[in-house]
Length: 79
Image (cartoon, rainbow, N blue to C red; front, side, top):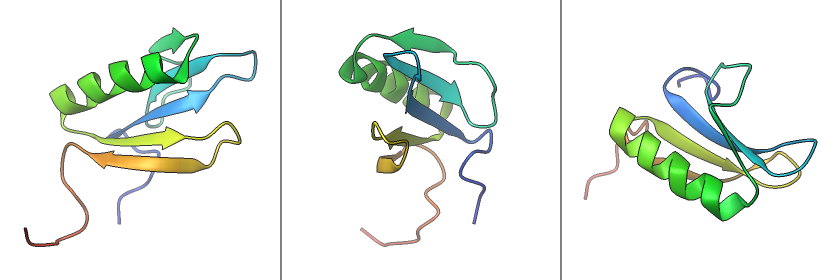
């Protein structure tokens, strides 16, 4: 299984100072900052699709609440 924070992922994370950040897996700094979660998710989905990465959308508590596969889906489910 791939590392959840590796370069093959993008994350939407709550910023401790408010708002939401979009980060590439393993990066220390956010690539973009947004005031709303929805704006961050919309941007992250576009980037994730373009780069073929897995998207991890975190809740306010930092736990992963949703994942979208835009690259190599680690699950091999037919259909």
